Image (cartoon, helix red, strand yellow):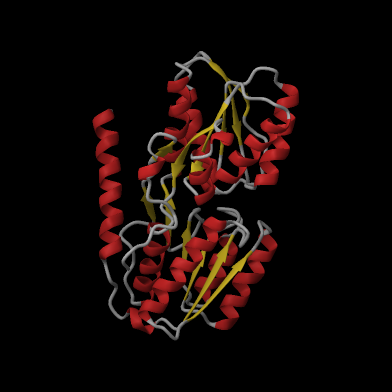
Length: 319
């Protein structure tokens, strides 16, 4: 089984690299693109949107790229898609608020002849979905916990908004913990809202309810940092934290002795995701369908030991 998983990861990485180097024909025809992301207050979404915009402008400097945040309000995202359709965009890059509920809006775009590429999280009915291998990310982040605890301890899975990426990360984490009878999951269903404030709020509840916690897995870096800050407020240092993102804030946290309880984060490649999404969209308007509807970008674990060598979200790339 180890050999198969290893081969799968290499295959996924190779597929992503192949897509990065592919240039769709007739891509110069792009004139207008709409991008809808979860929140423009989230630095990851801002980086991905900016990268997508830069790559679109490389193909056509005059292309109009409109980026909006729906702030996790599905009704707002429906309205944004309606506006993109009315504006006659060539394709839509969509970070969907709900993998299934967004399907009618995607159908409406298709009816108008507009392809939709979902990125970061998947969407039912999208022409393609480009995401981190989120099951893998949750798995490697929680394997770190299981290994450090030697298979025994009280742990918490700090959940988040129920988009596909979060669901997959939690499922990957649960797959790991299920292998260890000595690991007790104290909580796995509280929503930290994907934010620092949300992570702090739910962590305050954990710290009141549970006198013994050995580790907490949070579904993203903002929640991890909020959880660590909540622990500092009440002088709790009996547990450690892992998460998913590999964000610039997490890079700083992993180098900060004052946040030593944060120990690891499974990375997301926020350069590869928008690049593959843009090139897939350009291919679609040129009449080229992607070979697969789901394109997974591999994740790797960033720790206090290897963070110095980590090339993160703000690393410069040659487009």
